[in-house]
Length: 319
Image 1 (cartoon, rainbow, N blue to C red):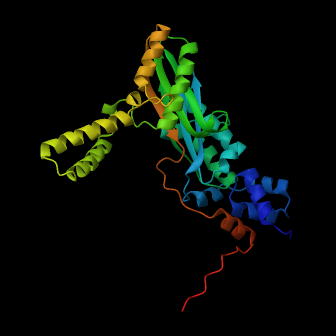
Image 2: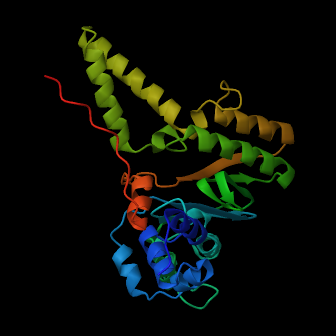
Image 3: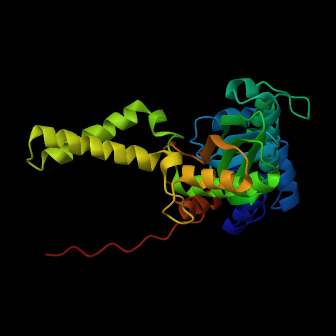
């Protein structure tokens, strides 16, 4: 049997996106032949997918696709960021994003849609889990559409065309042309990626989030020792400030840090002589809200290859 080194396991993992233990097994089964090991991984049975389903999938890719007055964003998760570099995984995310653009953003309905291969999104995803060797999931999708104008897309931390770590869509309802809407939408999308607004308008913020901020503000104000009527004014002032900073239209534009976003849109409308309304937006950040498991990559590679891991010497006990 060929000597399977940690370097070989790591190289196959980077090339295939498969899990390390699967890579080690593939190399062992094929006598260390990298190409044959790749083929072995691709031909694994679907039963392997079930074993991966309990693993936390918080990495992966966000896909963004636009076509004139429509745009879609999709998040597909995997266990590690190695998979984001896998061409099979990238092709899957890209195609699913296009399907969402054409059919809608109900994630469950999207899973039942047919892909170019003729099989459903769910079946292709299950096969990918088996061949790539990591748990994966179609987490969410969102589509925006305007009656006239444009939906502009932007990808931050781009991994490939239309794929990255943060995906943004900006819906601009307008009778202005693309020469006006595209650059405006791109700047607004970059702002959204950086500033992380929680709603379009302050009145659209989650009521539970607002009440939590109100409770925090009340506790802080109570420490001032001021009369109750003054404390209430302090609380309402703090809540108003939070709404202003959390809502997209009232946030200060990141390009100059002084102009509210709604004024940026109004200025573009005035200069173009057209009506422009920022109707909606989407911001998907990869793994947002998913509790990630901590792991030691070096230790995993060593364990997979059978190489003992070095440990730091323990300090001598003192008298």
